[in-house]
Amino acid sequence: MKQALRYKKSLKVSSQWLPWMILGVLALVWGSSFILIKKGLNAFSAGEVGALRIVSAALFLLPIAAPKIRTLATRQKWILLIIGFVGSFIPAFLFATAQTSISSSLTGILNALTPLCTLLLGAAFFGQVITSKNGTGLGIGFIGSLILILGGTGNNLGEINLYALLVIGATICYGLNLNIIKNYTPEIHPVVITSVSLLFVGPLALVYLLSFTQFTTHVQASAALWPLLAIVALGVIGTALALTLFNKLVQMQTAVFASSVTYLIPIVAVIWGVWDGEVLSAYHFLGMGAILCGVYVANRL
Image (cartoon, rainbow, N blue to C red; front, side):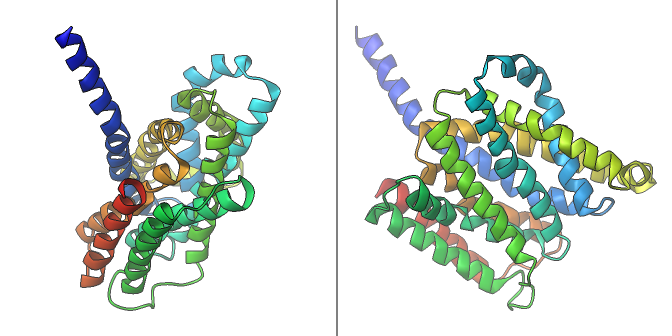
């Protein structure tokens, strides 16, 4: 009897920590995605990077998606099609295009606007209530993000240009995607959400890649191997596997909690940026501290 009670207690503790563990893994994976995009752009265009990311993720999950699609109702298929576009397809192209003019560190920093977009879109269209608790936490985290943005990748505002709007557009897509998953797909398994949504947009990305870009020429270049591997890793690990974990997290917790991963992503992104020669200033440390504080306040106060 005592053994059974101890086992139940350990399961309860594990279930309490599981969302935080997933949050940490996602922060590491997605925080690394911006440096992989940067490396991919060394040999391929922004369109090629975005399309190949989607194609590699869709192909990786194809064995799962193909048999599952027949089990879905028409309404569910339409929802997953929308999720495929706003959660994967559009952001992949927006991020790659933005990084042709913005550093990987700054892109990761701007991505931290996702929780704010999630909260505002949830309140505007999905009946979500903004409580003082998550509002305070998001506010602190957002201030941290602003500090990082003001610090840029050096100590000036010069690097922030119109390409930053593309990243903001991607965060709006993510915020919409989060609310759709939370409100309209609770009965669908996270793996099915990810695999089928990517299956819907994968063919479009493949057609674009092979018919409207110079991918077949660029991939034959001697310097294309490592950029190619970087993009494939981005698609398989950073999109297919990470999205599956993320969709599971959305179903386990609130959309605001799940979107809090984007408060941690800048820390990883900036570390990778420094490793690759980008500048880390005191602003980054101050901003990162505020971001971590915001995550704690929003979810544990």
